[in-house]
Length: 92
Image 1 (tube, rainbow, N blue to C red):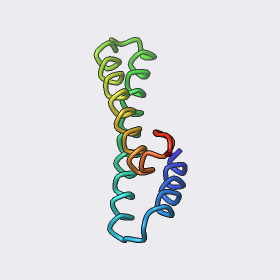
Image 2 (image 1 turned 60 degrees about the vertical axis):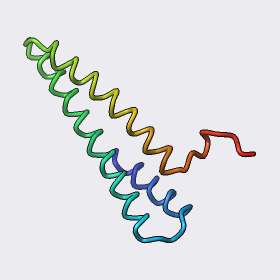
Image 3 (image 1 turned 180 degrees about the vertical axis):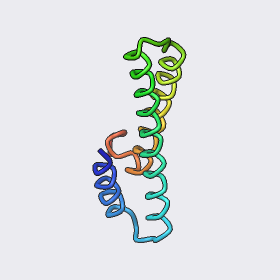
């Protein structure tokens, strides 16, 4: 599941002027996105586990729902920034 992010990094890096600091910034940004997605997945797994165990899971589902939606928003924002808005606006 992580490999598409790594592939995107290589695509983004090919389009950017060859600046080593920019490559590192992109790698860190993608690492943050992947980390947040993994944490969101753990929140969801915990909620599912509590439901399957027959325990109260209302609080965990609410936390997971909020966190997953925030991660989705941040991930899309980072992706648009990495690709410099291509596809987000029409070229003139």
